[in-house]
Image 1: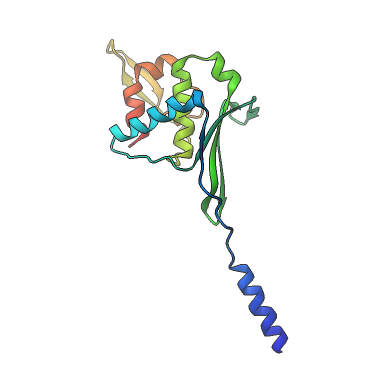
Image 2: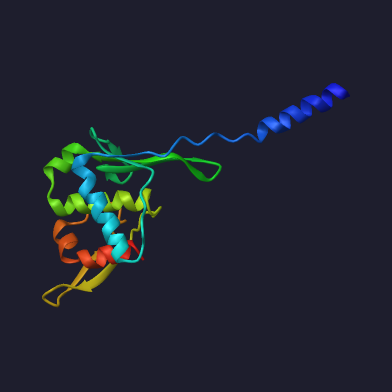
Length: 167
């Protein structure tokens, strides 16, 4: 009986162990740093002070396909007992990045930072806004739309998209 109680006590204490957290790290590819800096600055302007102390942002070879189509960016996080464990990592398809325009780069990085820094999920809805010529235009309601937003829309409605990101 004594051995059974000792074994039971040891077994219960082993179950309560938690994984030690790896130390936070920040590693951002220099070519991507300006997008992270702009994201932090836009957050501050919107009243959200972001302190990036645990994030990796880097280029990757092509990321492949998913149920949503060709993947050009990805936020990878690991969870343990409902909490983020380790360092969130943003991967950007270098071929796409090199072949696209500045507005598409900007929205791609903001989208992935939305996942990894603000913990936002995809939004699939659309809204109608008036463009500069006062015509009604339907656009994705958020940079968190899971497909690449048209560069013209990203540029024309940049203030709206940034405001929505940090609400």
